[in-house]
Image (cartoon, rainbow, N blue to C red; front, side, top):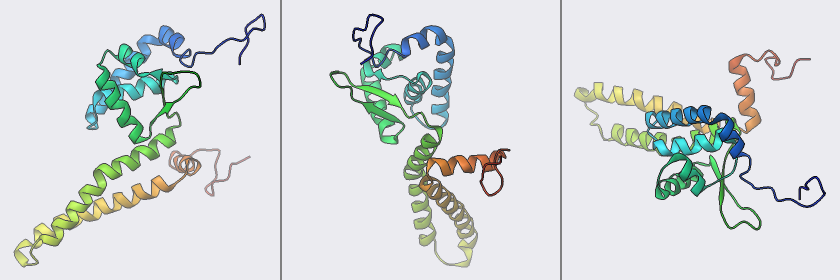
Length: 200
């Protein structure tokens, strides 16, 4: 347990880190959170879900559902529903504190872990169902000359989505270090040679 100047034990509040951040960077955080709400809608995600994640991530602190509700000015039901969804995505974790009855929530902080989990969830929700529909549709098109153009277009689309599915499947099997190496390859990190070894 941390001690104060007199050597007496002090209790560290698990959410203590967020108050000075909010006080010093309130406007910056507000703009960041609002932008994630806008982007969430563009990605087909609930705006509140985007804002909740953004607030947890940018502050790097543990929050209670009630504190999130008060800060974002949304309903308890909204917070509860979207926290459950973020936990399902694997980008927010529930934190249990010994001796603390309240539940706290924390965002995953590693961007490559976030990337892998988001890719996996979008593959499951979007790529897999779309590919299944395309395959079924191609199978049901009559194999006659007058439908050949339609078949060709759908097969091309099916092949494209199948490729995206393979890429997504491969990405979510890579560990975080492999993903970082892949990022370095695309960005041309000068500290790495083509074999992946760090140059001296």
